[in-house]
Length: 304
View 1 (cartoon, rainbow, N blue to C red):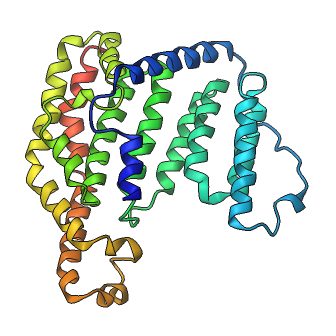
View 2: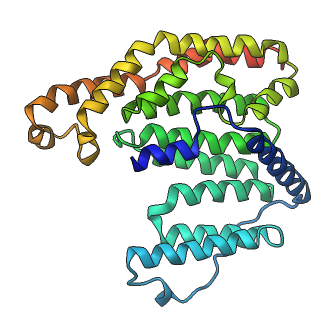
View 3: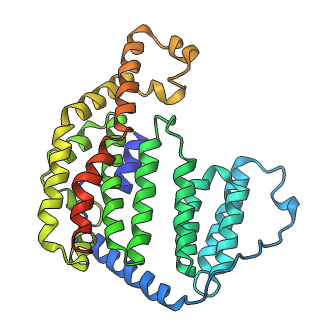
């Protein structure tokens, strides 16, 4: 129940309300205005000196609280000293590596605001590389979240085709992620939709087509996505039903481990085999091939 509520908060399945769009636009303006002010080239900031004793021998809770203080301090210094903020976030990652993924999103965003967009993109590459495909419970949701954060950076940098690429990969991994947790109501909402662009900041999605000068192709873009998910509809529903029947037993162990697999009740072992097969299929090359053959040419044709 906790996971379900969490992802509902992060990525509502329905089109965002007007207040959400208004917030997106206000936030976008603030980010773009600030980015224009940051003309200096980023230099590697020196790590702030803090007493080593302040982070040694701390419990997980204490390290978390200390890291959160560093993050708040980084946020407070964002406009006056972006390099100091970057140092503080890096230190927070050292103090509490368990929060590396979330902290790294903020780190990449701040590096981008400092003017070094290539290092920002490299930071996202490292996040992707750190994700483990063997993390059956969270891999697709982490991938979806990373693409979501990355597309915001691309929007700030006015790289709208890349934004739409990230939107596609966010959409795919998010749908696979909710299916892997047996959340059938949200899955059915997506699969029955005839408008994929209404999800996750729809006004921003639409504006990218206008900025690229391909607003007339927005309908074709959407139709291709809808068609793709119709093609894998049955597989996703089956995957979701298997996950629900498993009752998340795979979350607590390595499904590739014979010891763990043999410890499962007999009724779960066959389901676990089916789940793993579907999981491998969904994390193969099929969607990437679809994107490269069907979507990418649509976005690039007007830029040539």
